[in-house]
View 1 (spheres, each protein chain N blue to C red):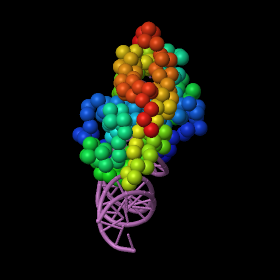
View 2: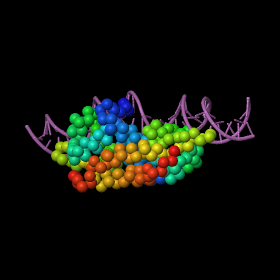
View 3: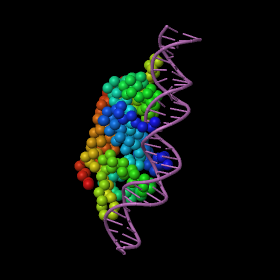
View 4: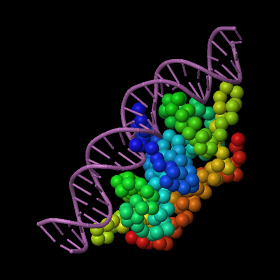
Length: 109
Length: 109
DNA sequence: TAATTACATCGCAATATTACGATAATAATT
DNA sequence: AATTATTATCGTAATATTGCGATGTAATTA
């Protein structure tokens, strides 16, 4: 079928999966890492940096924006993107909460 | 096209994206959360718990196994699955390293 | 050995993702 | 107003993912 049965799962599970999906592409990881070190950048910078077409970068930026990880502000003729620190911490906690649920002490099998 | 241009990115970026893809489905999150609280379980438990078909659960288990997050050991006629603590910590670090790269102090835009 | 139990794999249909050329939209510049 | 620069959106082709019935496989039991 190809359609996820979201009604079978909790809101938290669906939310974490949706966020993880945004991290599930190396171009979006690369964009985030570039934003971390550059603090902010425009679409054209990323086209230069990553070697993907402008339309493709724009599409990845939209997905990052839709999940709230980045924000864009119009800066003259271009759009300045940067990480949203609030959302960033929120997403960090989402993953953290899953990981700390399994303490490494318990060697089961 | 539909095929990711992995050659444009670093091994680390591709690895993190590949791991994130495994987390990018609520059923796999649910399986991991179930394993955290139950310590170990068999395929049939998850079919009962999640309400997906046996073949579907088996497929999700394979993806979790392929990335190394879980291990399965034959237990009579069934297979006992549990989280691999070593790999779990490794994956936790992969995400952690990305998140701590952006300290929340820097309010940019 | 035949039947049973539990899981993996195959094959398929429905849907989603990825990449990009073409084109539209918006703001600055001439 | 026309041009330029930058980004967003549309449409499309190629590929990937999701879910499940059907079938295969391996170990246990009758």
